[in-house]
Length: 177
Image (cartoon, rainbow, N blue to C red; front, top):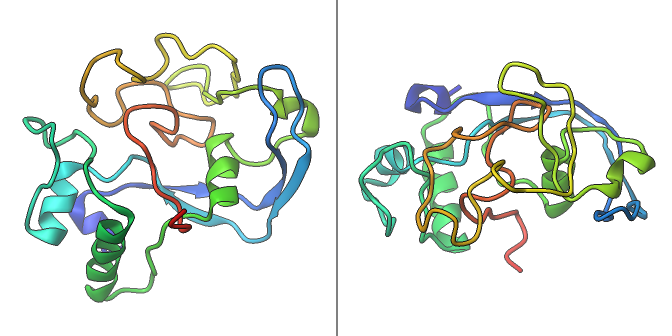
């Protein structure tokens, strides 16, 4: 992987069926099937990775190369992906579609009764057993909690081993909306 040379790590997202929407005790009502599995970065792109590809660091909160890059537009991200893909290799890097993002966030395939939660975490950093919850307290950096981003991977991942799906920074999908 070209991105591996930058220090980026990826997790396999298996194909399967899931339910989107829901939360707060209400089951999701939109069926979704990921037909083919895909690879997903286990962390948001860090400031160090952005710097290596783009030659700059547009982030407002600097001082830790493991902070996620922030203060970037959807168009900035498209330029990053274009430059990353121009490095060659066997893979094409892209943003997930919105429905793919939600599927990934929840940790892959889930039954409708499992879609009733707002947040999807693993039990611990070493036990990836699903532990969904409607409580985000102390499980992610969100809102005005720390007043700045956290280093990527500071909190528990989701059941796929993918970090920071809830909180830390806003994440873009392939839709510019």
